[in-house]
Amino acid sequence: MKNRGHIEKTKEKKQEITNFNDFENELFGEIGTKARDEYEVELSLEIIGEMLRIEREKQEITQEELAKKLGIHKSGVSKVENNTKTQKISTIIRYAKALGKKVFIRFGDTKKDLEIVLG
Image: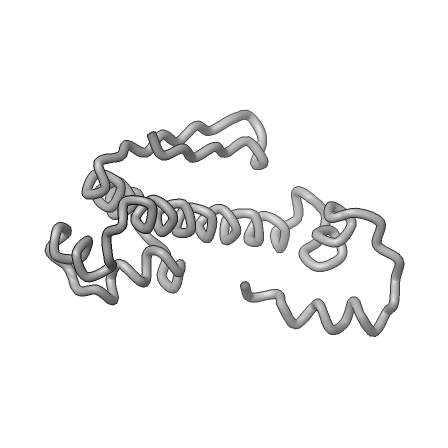
């Protein structure tokens, strides 16, 4: 993630952080700030890639095999799983479909209310 350099600054400050929310606030700002919103989006994208990778591995399918099903290069599968490039929703849906899964995305009333499920 982009803000990893902040970890060193936090160590230098030697502030006492009592829970993970405090840690996120220290590194990425309070909920509702631009920096925090960017962090939340990036984190969601990383989680999606990780979910897809776990499902592929559970089905014992290699990246090469999945790439062949999708008609893309193996590097394309790797980019989705490792979130090295922002993916379109259509790409994520195609990927899940190739694994025999559906993607369910639910948006709520707040920026924290985003749920993504493979089913």
